[in-house]
Amino acid sequence: MNVPAKKYFALSICANVVLAGVAFHLFRQPAARASASATRPVLVAVRTLRSLAADSPAPVTCAINRFHWRTIESEDYEKYVANLRAIGCPEKIIRDIILADVERLYAARRRDLGIKSPFWLAGSQRRKAGRAQEKELNALKQEQASLIQRLLGIEWLPDSGRTFDKFEDQALMRFMFGPMPEESVWRAVHLMGKYEALEKEVEHRCDGIRLEADNAKLESLYQRMLGELASALTPAQTEEMMARAAAFELLDHTKFDGADVTAIELRQIALARASAGGRLFDWPVDETDEERKAKEEQFKAAVRNILGEMRYADFERAQDNEFRKLFEFSKDNGLPKETAVEVYDIRKLVAEEAGCVRQDTSLDEPARRQRLEEMQAAVQKEVSGVLGVKAWQDYLNRGGAWATNLNQL
Image 1: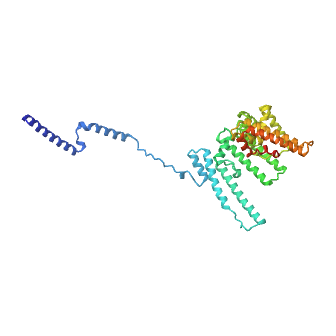
Image 2: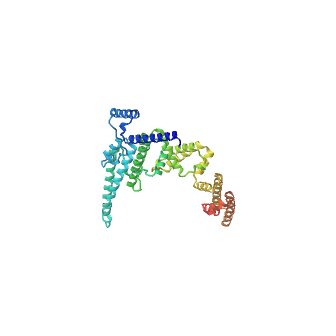
Image 3: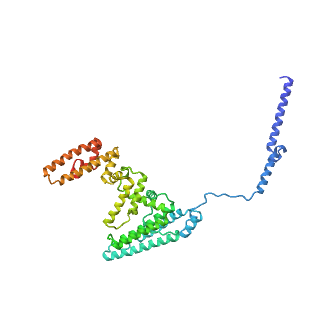
């Protein structure tokens, strides 16, 4: 290595030693002794933050998940209701909560009554004990009704039977009432439950033997219920509810899809049924055969006016139980409605013809039997041909035995 190179090498080593010493010295010094140029921005930022903190209001402490239901719930029902309203709970939810809670309370109290009389009691003593227990139960029911009236401001009958706890019952109820606000549904349910309980009281009192006074009482209750419903609902809501209630009644014994009735026509038919004396929820009614026949004729005339004479015949057929069974059978076997209609018509004609043969006094017994056997063979061939081999065998097992034995007609 030449002299200049050695000189530069020595200078480099010295410089590195000096830098290492300076670095060690700086590392051990407090941050406050750092150079003014390096610390000035940091000091400015710190002073700014301290100034903002001094000018700001007192620190706010946020608490979450501190709500406890025990702060709302109370054994004092009046306080319980007040607490629920204070937190903005909707009235419907308050009503549901309180009704359920009160029902649990009184259900337990009714169970506690139990059967207090000894099991060996009989005769008049047992009946007396039963009456005493029934009196206690009635007192509890009245107490429960009074409590609910005081808490919620509604009249409530524990025996109304219209709590609709199940989802299916609620869905069916809302469908039957049609589109209306929740509070309107509640009022309608409550009113009908109230009068249903009153109707049961009358039925229980007369023990299945209704006198004229009982029928008059039931009719009066029904008319009062209709009047209160009309006051609680709008005219449109009342009409829709009556129409849907009548439609439910008709659907029990009419296969509307077997008569190609549209939704609009079904509503018109339901309103016609309601106008012709249809009752909500099979409310009992006492009427003479003449009155019943007059209402039925009024209804039929209205349906003829809605559908026309030709389609009215389809409507009447759709109410026949035999056609309804045939219609369902055809659907199950992938057959068109026309097949059900054809087999139904064959059955109807054969039944009429067989009746005529049986009543024909000009035929002796052998001739009558021969005629029926000929009809039997022709019917079996005709019906099996209409249905096809597979459906024919199924039909014989599902009410079609008449096709092989006319004695069943």
